[in-house]
Image (cartoon, rainbow, N blue to C red; front, top):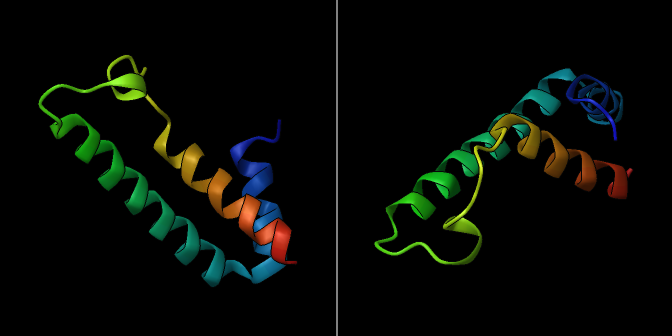
Length: 72
């Protein structure tokens, strides 16, 4: 598996620095919101109930990397 740095470098190569930062920031914000909403459930079920602490930045970079690599 690629590291965060390697994935970010390939995103930057594909779309440029400013666009890469914007895409990852937006994905990171979405991960934070998703994480917080799952914690607000009164009785978390399934994955939310037993979810270990997540690296939200890694998840965001992975999502952006996947989309960018598919489209470029």
